[in-house]
Image 1 (tube, rainbow, N blue to C red):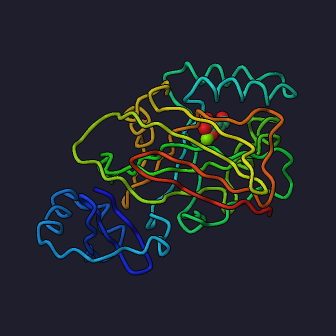
Image 2 (image 1 turned 120 degrees about the vertical axis):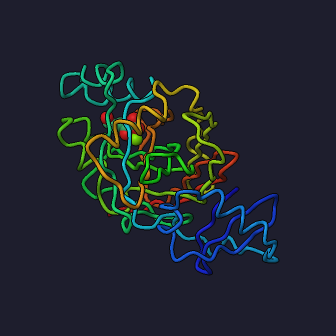
Length: 278
Ligand code: DO4
Ligand code: MG
């Protein structure tokens, strides 16, 4: 089942048909003990709507905090070591890649998150910026994965590379995170699933980067990341957790205003965003 948040309300899609979900809010769904049961009852009533206008899609978020994971793929470990050469090479990235405790960081409050077709930002004071396509988990307050979407962890590699203590400035600024286009709902409790992920970047009508990976290449399990996220923390409305990037453009690549980013995972769809500066 797929969950859509639109300007006309919430909808689920099952077998190519769309059903209106009468719930108070996105948050009200996330906190349900039996979300699947509730949505199945919506579908069973059989009142399908004739059409869903996907131009009306909103960011699929309520008031959840958005967190992110780092260095969960070997590709990310190598890129971090490279970008932090000026600061001494950063063996801490190698250490976090192999440590039991993952790198987790706060990424965004909900109102700063961009949705499908929205504008993501590169920082005015950055010279080396990239998008990071990351499979993203939606977890409920009881730490169960209830859905998946695509997240863009926009990052300023020059700022991050100068000093790891600058990581929050490289990662956390307005419109530095995009989510969408929809939520693929999990049907049964599972610790891990494999998703292929692709990213392409268009500039002036031509492709300037294409890459792909799969969550099968991740060093860590979703369940381990969630376990650490939940330690000594509470998420009364649930939370989103980006699971790290395994796609990083070559070191001579930086985003430019006007670029168009597309991130795709077959079951979830394509998250498209335009790049602006500052
Ligand atoms: O350690 C820096 C952050 C890495 C990151 O965001 C990622 O691997 O996706
Ligand atoms: Mg990232």
